[in-house]
Image (cartoon, rainbow, N blue to C red; front, side, top):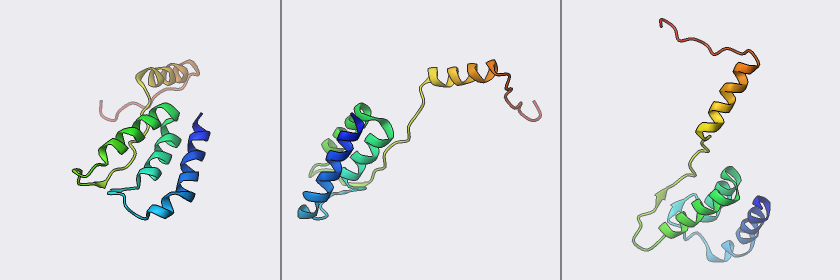
Length: 98
């Protein structure tokens, strides 16, 4: 589902966006933000982030720089990686002076 959404955004950027000109208050533009959000976070969360960004783009907003937040791994993912590393026999480095 991710790649059809990315294709739709690219088609918009190639066809409609040049006709509108640079009208976005934010940097990066909403279409670039949407492309990066969907590429980084997946179809569901990326679409939600993009929709929230478009809702914030209104006549009363000041605009500015608004980058896509970095992808965070959930707690269960960190615990699974820790468990897998212990299972393979890898040890974590101990803190100096502790």
